[in-house]
Length: 97
Image (cartoon, rainbow, N blue to C red; front, side, top):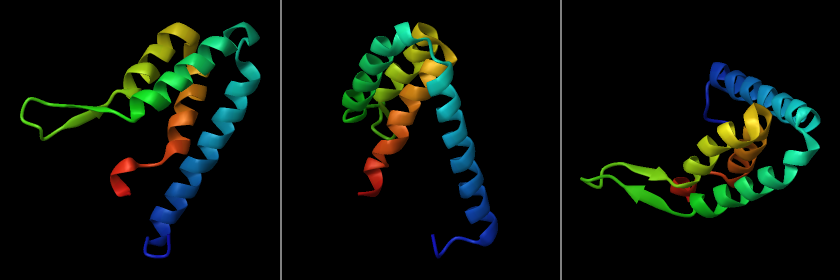
């Protein structure tokens, strides 16, 4: 991050700390009986993130992993969805490679 201004560095650091804290809270707060579903949704997220759907004019694309992340909110609740999203944050940005 050497080319980022100091304000941007502080913002990235703050978001990272809050994300880490939420991940720890989610891991402690999740119902143990939902862990299987969380793992399956996380796996679906990883597989879906490898593919993307193009729009009608091929200008926009959406990762199919976002479908699993959205489904996680309804299927395993907020804390489970946080853990599924954590998997997505570890993958990085495939556009920048």
